[in-house]
Image 1: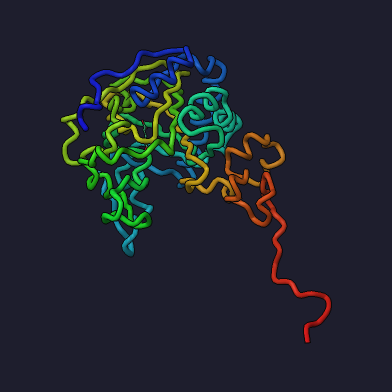
Image 2: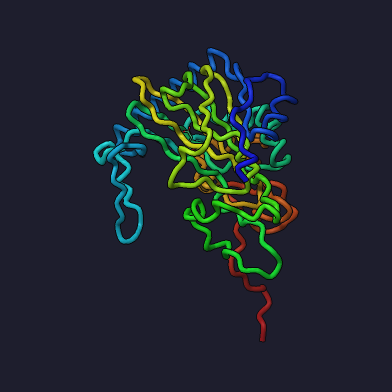
Length: 332
Ligand SMILES: O=C(O)CCC(=O)C(=O)O
């Protein structure tokens, strides 16, 4: 398995065919100058305003603190653990489709069509649209994949983990898969939009080149054994990566914020991480293009995601619900 892992990743490229080849070989590609200076400024301003307002209103989610203690309440993660008060550092913002046109434009960007489409096919949907502001003092997130829940290939008739019982513990249980069984394909693809320069000092995303082909999850106990790269790139660059790639936020040992927006897609037969269809701000509906609605999950895929007829192409945000009915003629 380790033989699939490569010491170094790809060079930056603006050549789409090269970017696709990089995705196949390394599991990621980096494209410079995707956003121009105005687009960077607009997106950065929108992100920072939103982040400040969410903090002010007590809505902010913080992780990555050195001494952050994640507590349980009634057996579930306690939301209050993810606060500055509790030692959280990196600020996460979710459901960005609701938080600015600049973020909605990322969902339908032509490079997303090309590169995510290269991995998932034409009909992929938005899983999560979030930002991660990696702040000074934030620690490494730790390597993981974005499709830890994907059932692994099994030998006919042998035992398997029941799909609904796969948990994040899979990260540890699949360290050495049986490669003779083959591996699962990518069903998730991620886009990291860099709104500031990314460097190993400010917490650039850690990646392990070639790890998408190992069929494995990274060992959680000791990750120092892996050749971790942290692709450096200027603000405006886009890193696209395979859902199977081992990756995670780097430690920010510098003194500036690292601003990243993660637009995560999945194949349409899988569940979205954020419930985009229920969560979309209803006031935005009329301004959403058909392409955006489809990406948000309003498009029916092979009869899945429908409300009534499988013949419907797009479901409506306020669909007609056929309730219990009675015929007008009484049954005797
Ligand atoms: O912030 C990053 O660089 C990566 C974040 C990430 O891997 C995640 O949120 O799952």
